[in-house]
Image 1: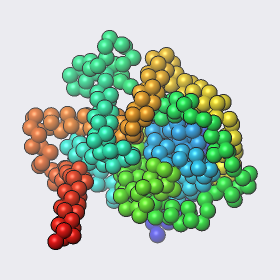
Image 2: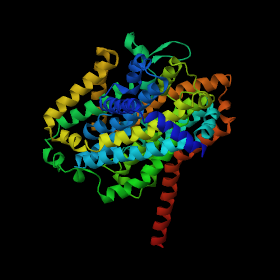
Image 3: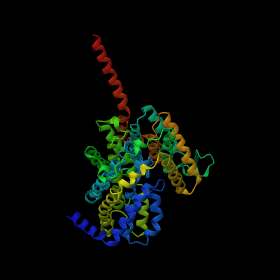
Image 4: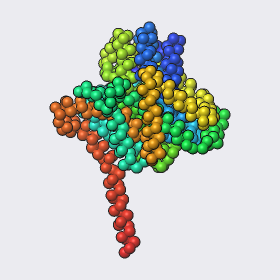
Length: 507
């Protein structure tokens, strides 16, 4: 009853005209931020920090939180329509979402994305309200050692993404890890692979790499193909024809439920959040699917699961912040800065000292998710109509978005040149039969893995045995070994069964 009464208090805070307007503004800005490549919620929230000071404590957090989970909705739009991930967590959606669009099911993909995100957002919010303070204590058990082991498992799981062979996937993971090392060493301060280029001291930006590998390379691929207007543009104008059909909705239920759970659990962990949640969900769906061959070709499960997971992960990451004072990722770190600017210290005392902030933010998530689905579903037809643009003009627009998005990051032409370079790299790799998704995911996880690995070795005074002293770390490493060795073991036993069957026939 305490939870229900506190939620009622939270709704009383949110359901005022001013806070409803603030929630709507956050949802709208978040969607726009997700659609625009390169900007991202971290930069947007950072830019709005000075404005948030002029709002009251609860309104400021409602605005910034709405931008964050709104970006999870918006990021899927360009991923599905033009294969440019508007936000890093939407990279996985490019794989099957874009293929659904190519097959004339862009409306279904957008509808599944919006509805799946809505269900996951509501489920994650209920989880925050009911078990947040209790479950958040699990995050305290994850130090650098445990996080490094978890990321080893993540890098191993990446090998299952894509359609290329396992050897090529290993090569792409290695290349992604290598690209992630460019910049200044986090421990020694030495420059690595900088080549006296000042902008490279900060390394390559994730949006720059993503837009080049996915967006620009797609333009180059399309330039070598015939116009596919008949394939892409055959859409009905009626909303009901643009939404998922009964079969697609049925196949999406399980992935949405599983994605919500995966996103919620990983969102509790430092470094987890939306990005890792989305690709873990994708891997789970591919592993358990009865149609694994459809993944990469337009499987609706490849959209429903990751989109549910990234939204649930984004909202669950508020639990460590509000209950423990631990920012789970960069975006939450900026929101923590906003709380501190408002004179609020997040942590165990927040619920007691500022209950209106804690429960007001949770109630605003219910309202914000409802606003987002009401904003996105009616606009599905408008989004799909973008695919009526001729392929040549669409390619020009994609290049324009990529260039503007890359330049807007740091107002630097270096980012634009790097994005073009990654575009040609992605084009060459794709034409050679390599899948670029493992490369980008390894590039994203690589710096986090290196930081945790180095910190763990410092804790263990340079001894790698420190990673075998934590039960959590041992469990993750053992699971990673099983995942890595499973295909080889299966191939060996499969070969033996084939030989035995052949010998039986000869007898």
